[in-house]
Length: 215
Image (cartoon, rainbow, N blue to C red; front, side, top):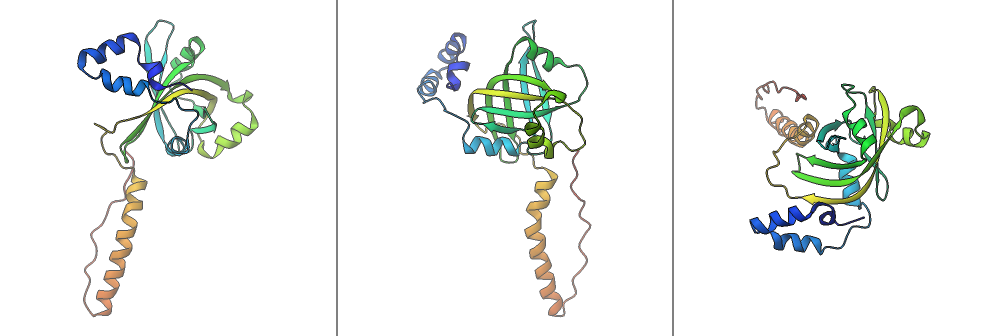
């Protein structure tokens, strides 16, 4: 693997850093040892993600960014430097697929809004039609697929990655996370209410609490 700075800090980027006074920070990033593989921290973060954004470049030179989503576990590190995921049927424009046929380079951003963390990755991707995918790959990613129609699988060889700062990431919590965080409080309330009833104190009914739902 390479340093993220080796791929991202082109001459015009360095010029911008000098112009805006952040060149010293850039130099420190250039001196970091390059990663040798995806570590446990990255693997765990990736395995828990439910969505990410992927950028490709078309034959006309224009970048294109697309959202990919699925159940936690739909993206997995299958070895030290390779990610795999099912590519579900979408709007059938196939812009990203066509772009990858032209240029396999991709950039990914994975954001955990609840923990306000984000991981940037750069790599080279290729797609495999679902009918031609290895059975082991299909079985490994199968639990995350559900009823979605898988048209192909993406394999992304990661060339570099970097953890981004948490600035300006809005706090968003999934309905499942809200329910999980409320469970200890609800158990505590149940216990307190039982103590009140044992003491002969009337406990008013709780107000209806709507079940969190995904938008």
